[in-house]
Length: 275
Image (cartoon, rainbow, N blue to C red; front, top):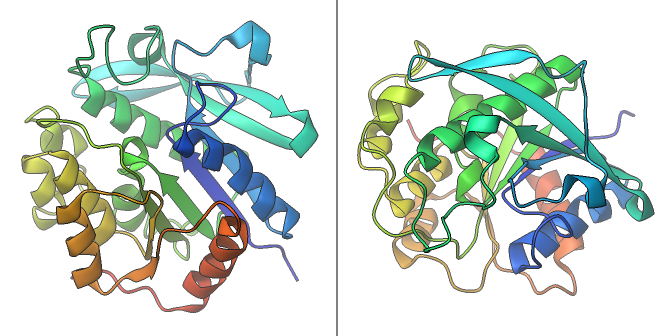
């Protein structure tokens, strides 16, 4: 029997960034799931604060070289990779000079969120999709962690739903306490729009607050995970009212087993998306 394939798309992974709850899960969950007998691939953004030399990142030429168009501008897609030897695990990094050269993750040195975070998130999600296509690797589950990866459920359930590589793929979204103030660019829904999306698909992105983009991700996900003890209450209520399969917050003692079981449950269930 073929191993189930899990694609992990993380906003943060330790040790590439300062240690955090999200980064720790990003580091150890994929390893634990691999040790449970599933096949994995793991992606994160190549933020400019990641030390490439220390972490031995190198460009994967055969995967790089595409251009992604966002808001009528061409952006080259660069793919880098590094290995965590002790875990027998590779991490793929989505890179682009315009979006990820700055020496920070999501906000500047004064604590202000970057004005182009919407385009950065779009580029990251689309970059992951194009790389997985090039790898010819068809995931059974896509697990997106953190709001920066929250556009992937939308893409998988609209743009990719007729693609035979992804037509049976289930999507799981992890919600953390990673809220940002205000909202992303008000034209975000125009930048996201493709011929496969209708007006209703993009409704939440017309006012792209943290809560709204998380709600949109919930709509397009097959399962939802509460990955922090305290999350946005509006989003929590939306998830509970949605009827989606839900994994409650897990202690760090048994979260790997709980996630592995949850993936199996999601794979066994019929896909139920909000109409």
